Amino acid sequence: MKIQVTCCDCLKGMKKLKNESVDMIISSPPYNRSIGGSWKLYQSYDDNLSIDEYLDWSLNLFKEFNRILKKDGVVCWNFNYSMYTVDLPYRLILKLQESGLKLYDTICWNKGTGVLHPTSRCLSRLWEFVWVFAKQDEYYINKRDKSIYKYFQGNFPTNLLNITIRTDGQYRNEIHHTATFPVKLPEVLIKLYTKEEATILDPFMGSGTTARACQNINRNCIGFDIESDYVEYTKKSLNQKNLLNDQVVLVIDEERENKIKELLTKYDGMIDRQGAIKMLEAKE
Ligand SMILES: C[S@@+](CC[C@H](N)C(=O)[O-])C[C@H]1O[C@@H](n2cnc3c(N)ncnc32)[C@H](O)[C@@H]1O
Image 1 (cartoon, rainbow, N blue to C red):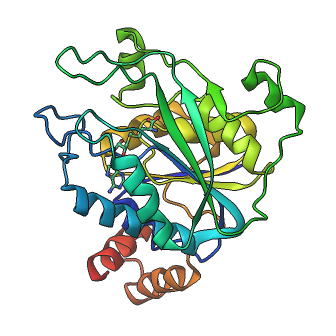
Image 2 (image 1 turned 180 degrees about the vertical axis):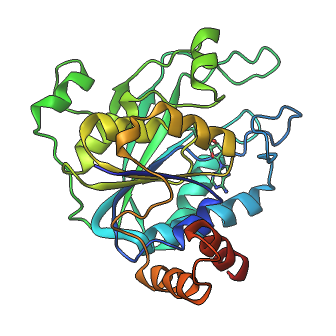
């Protein structure tokens, strides 16, 4: 099992992955939640694009997913709306299908708790969407694995997932992030949609929950996050022996690897691998 976490914009990070090289993409992206309000959820950006900008940005992500996803792979996209963007999920689903990926399932994640908005007429939101997109009808799914039943209170898997999130202050301090999903969520979905040793990508990895799930159930993981704090936290919290520090997992672009080697040869001992990567990125 190999886990690679990198601090970068995920669109840039994905450019380095080969065509049809990952078995599953699972993530909870920024929901554009700050639109209409003045609160700030993340440190380095505002999460308040215009709706059209957000739809275009999301479509660009999905086009890249379509390129890197294996033929029988799936994308599990966890999404929620704010009181200012109640229709965004439906607009987003239509937009995302322009990428060539098709919506095959909608799972309701009942998180058991929600924020009350005393000034809004909307009801408190206790659940979130998990959309399942794939390239083709024959995507991989394994509903018969008995070890999955425990996530469904001992029953056959359904499209209602009851996984309560912890919201207490102690937990928030421990995980070092404001918008995490519980580890059981990626765990059950990864088990359902992949085999052991599959390669999973979380482009918005946050505090590394998906990487921890992969570590628990023996999958390879590639994770990106734009905030270096989160990436450092993830690296520290994972089992170090599985963690690749800027090494390359099986899916990395060979062409790029050759360019790195060329630079190392050209500058013969004057730069190390990190230096070569920086030079390449400056050119990209
Ligand atoms: C909803 S959080 C994900 C939380 C994660 N599921 C967890 O359990 O910790 C979204 C994450 O996306 C990151 N992010 C935002 N824009 C990004 C980008 N362009 N590329 C990579 N990461 C980004 C944020 O820093 C944030 O940690």
